[in-house]
Length: 393
Image (cartoon, rainbow, N blue to C red):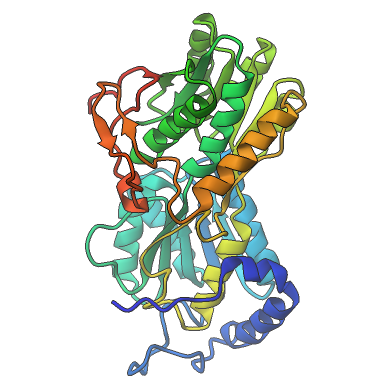
């Protein structure tokens, strides 16, 4: 498949007036179900995703979780602001099973020709809906399609481990006990990437540091989160981060114990006025909006979005960004972060640039090697310095 590059996402933010004017013209046709929108060459039919009256977003949790779903919801509202003539439909607490298919089909019946399925486990229902509705574009957040990607489908994500690596540097310079904690949901590649990047970042400035991990087997279970956090604190951990969809419980428990927090998914600094260090958070609005612009223009099929689309610091437009610093972060730590950011943003840079050694001492990334995005998203091990085992399936 030939991939046709579209305009850089960062250009959307710097030319908002031009894009808004362009969108208004495009939407004039969409609102009246016009068939004049450009279709792929040689195809007389309307391109997938064009001509609809609505855009649908499904979330696996609540929109106010101080985490993953809140960030995705805020991105949907950025789309609503950019497309006032299209109705933005949202559905919270949508399970990762056939219920997701039913919710998406309901949105399609209400006029949606574009669907964002925003959870990792929504991939299979999203593929099912795309196959049943070739005139609808379905975009799935965070997973990967093996083999050929359908012409009305795409996955997308940021390189989540990059700002997590930088946050690890802050944690490594702040800890007094050299014990960091990480509460995570499931041992999928993204969570393993983040835990490893956090430890690698911390160890790059503090070789004595270790990261203790606890998994909850749930994206959002406040009781399990509180128990996991208390367990880490009892072991002397004094900086805690997480990969959970809802983040408030862990942050509040950590703050109450007088320990430090590194956030995830959304800015939750208001929950930890004393212990907030930094975090990693989504800024989905620009990317969501540009993907929609490509779709309503009839330019989706064959584009960079009709694939397993990933962006990171090397392209300058990662939708996953570093959160603001808290009061405990020193100028020295900030300088180390800036140095590291420049290093991993280079073409030959990466948080996983070799050598990378796993818990058993085996070299997984040789010295002088820089793994690509797909290799990193296939990681199935913990790096040296992580304390805890990956649960067996």
